Image (tube, rainbow, N blue to C red; front, top):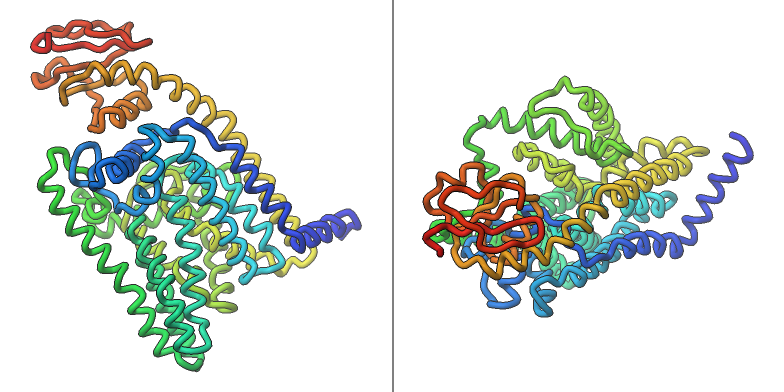
Length: 485
């Protein structure tokens, strides 16, 4: 290796010995994205409506319905922000930044246990990943789930490694609380308890003391989370019956009626393998094939990447069988029965384990390994910055400018039956849903719907028969049915 190459490797090694400034830099990159803009998605409307309901009326409701669809953990964490107003997006952004910093510290602590020489670079690779940035800017449950997940892993590992039963009991309470919160953010958090159980069984197989007692404690730790998930599923099913506009749930996805079990599994397997590659390969986060297409060129790239990760993961668990690493296969398996694509969103919580698995492949390259990670970090940072500046900032700014128009429309609308034409931007639809606290739908056949009382459409569109213009709001007009006049 050249002297310059050796010098870079030595410099990277020195950086790992003084991680503070670099961790602060990663936090600063995230702080630069704090914004009063709402990056709207259909799921964010549901989460924020529930959070506002918890803060204002102290009830569980989503868009005016008693059924909330998603577990209440994330809305509960966000609800205090709504005590300050109906649109506390700046405060929500600051809360997300605080969670991201807590998550980063948890990742660094975990990576330092698994691979101390690469902990800083691996933490950086997690924190500059474009998918992490995308979900960090949005009011979605991913960041909260990842933050609670990493510290639940630390708590469970601490309990497993306790030197005495008394110490294990003392550590069981925070571990149980974190696992409960994790499962109430997303039900799949229960698989972390399975990963813990496997870790304890491996310990017992290696003939360590007190492992049966630790396994019993693990079962006890997981009981509150399991009861909470079962209780929520039952409660939400009951509320769905009482709801005027039922919301799709995770259970609906697991019982997807139009596909067989084998079809769900094979499509879920293709999607999850693709997500692993989309998370790890710079610039590939938005590259995926058509549903069911195993012959797509992207899949030809992702399958070898998946094999590399699988080999690295096996090396990891052979060397140290911590809870996070042993959770990965159960988490992956759970989502193979979830045949839906959501921009690498579902495998995102496993990103730290995926990256450490890659490290265990390149670790034998003593003179180049840190340099490879540094190149990957620069590549991922470039992609994340580019997507933020080129795509998300203009989108967020343009949507934020619509709030004045949405407020005018929401103030005038008096009936539940309001529709938007297909040419109205989605962010206006979602903003109006949040403002009215009820679902607002888009339709192409609005003129034939006799129950429609209000229609929102661009100014340039011709008004439908039986409707007249009730209000102008920027580039939109609100039509009122003749029965409203």
